[in-house]
Image (cartoon, rainbow, N blue to C red; front, side):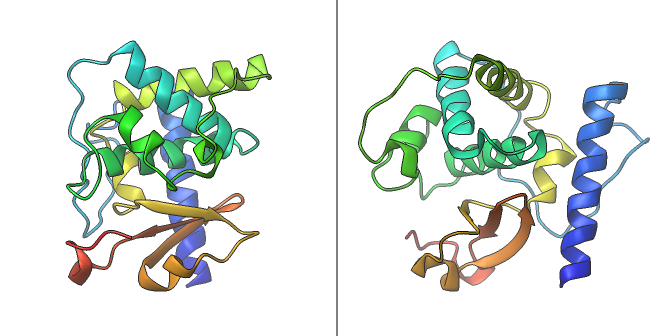
Length: 183
């Protein structure tokens, strides 16, 4: 299990590296990821500033101290939720759904204090909403719709399938037999 998780993270990191530094088209024949999971995230045709803003806020407050790969993974979870019938249909509604993301539990949106981290989150948000929305990056997390930090042990984690740990976050998806149930 530990080796499999390491391989998944390594493949994920390689994919991100290719996308950011070489500019490789992830849809082409140069890089292919095989997984039994079909991503929930369809290509986004029109990106609104509101979607970009709320996704970036979620990245900033949920994974701001994480490396880029961790921020991207949190963004993928947010997009997976938006495209899952158990969750709201807009990024803002997914992020602001009660008791889903800890930073929004008090329902107060604070201006991001660290401008460098905020700019990174905005850039990742744009990338996920345009270039990466239907790529192999998404499939590596196998449809993850949940995550938590290593510092907590939520009760819901026992009811989900653990996918991978990236940085300080552990990612989960619904069991294939549990596609209708929402926590």
